[in-house]
Amino acid sequence: MMAQPAPLPEMLMAGDPRYLLDTTLEKKAGGLDRLDPGALADYRACFDDPAVRHAMCEDYRAGATTDETDDLADRAAGRMIEVPVLLIWEAGRRYGGGREPLDIWRDWASNVEGVGLNGGHLLPETASEQVRERIEEFFGRIGHGG
Image (tube, rainbow, N blue to C red):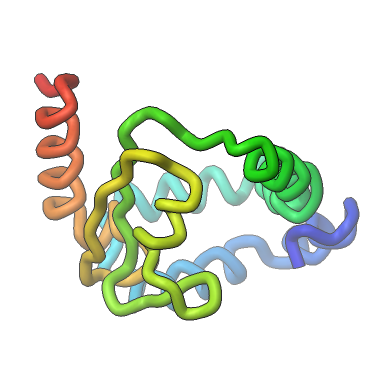
């Protein structure tokens, strides 16, 4: 829906942005009580802003149009991401036709590692300690720790 031409999704979201956000976050996190109250307040404050909702839609629109064109051109030219990449995803989930997330990203990056964590879609909020540990380990290993 968010990739539809403006202003359709923006107008639909404006009808009751707080209800839409809370319903979405509850589903993604497995309950609003799993989110830190400060994080939930930040999500709400941002989503209350029409400019933020518009920017979110623009991101989805780009993903459905120019991003795909650019990605296909990079693939055709043999270009890959050359910096180390850390991938953290929701454990037990499969993406892109049932493929494992690491397998998908190895098509795009020459040096990718990662782990699936339990906690749902909003891992920084629902599995924050595990995410922090993985990021610190990764940056320590590639020489950017501290």
